[in-house]
View 1 (cartoon, rainbow, N blue to C red):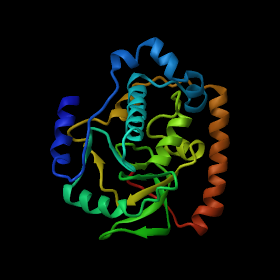
View 2: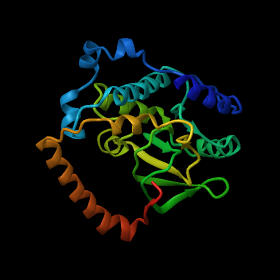
View 3: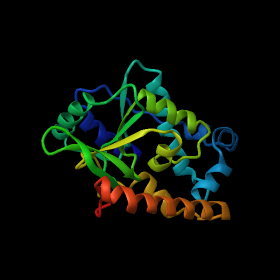
View 4: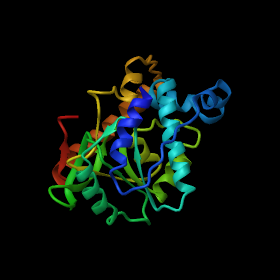
Length: 246
């Protein structure tokens, strides 16, 4: 399955004017009990996520962290991170991404999601080529395609050095890594769910939920704060949009 995913993505990437490299952790080394204990904070994960990551979720999270490390060891100012189930129109991707790269501020920790998001702010959106625009993201659970700059990668690696934030939990990354999170509207990348099942979706379906008191209390408190902010500030003043298709 992984081989088929990569070959499908490779055929698309070879048509683009960008250098690309496939990378992933060695599961046999990085997912041994000793390695997991060293590189993963189970207690903090359970307290904040309601349960520990399963093997697939941990592997996905460590793969994204590996990509950030390799990016920071390069000479590049930005990186495009794609999961192997991402698919897109080559022409659209090329036009929109090349326009977007001109607008990224290297002095601020910025991430630009290229996938569908749950909610975003329509006010103060920035126009891109064609019908596309860039908007600030409120909530999203999708890490299959995004652009990241060095400042954001540094802060995300720092806060998640001993992993406890899952790869696509952008709300936590905004809160704890203090990144500026944006999205291309409409999205230019989607997961190929017809041909392949989502990496994280499959693992979440079979996960065992163990909701502790600390998690439940924190989640309820955060929901109250989030709702107050949404109804008193984001909806009346910021053009809050809930994407009903996600």
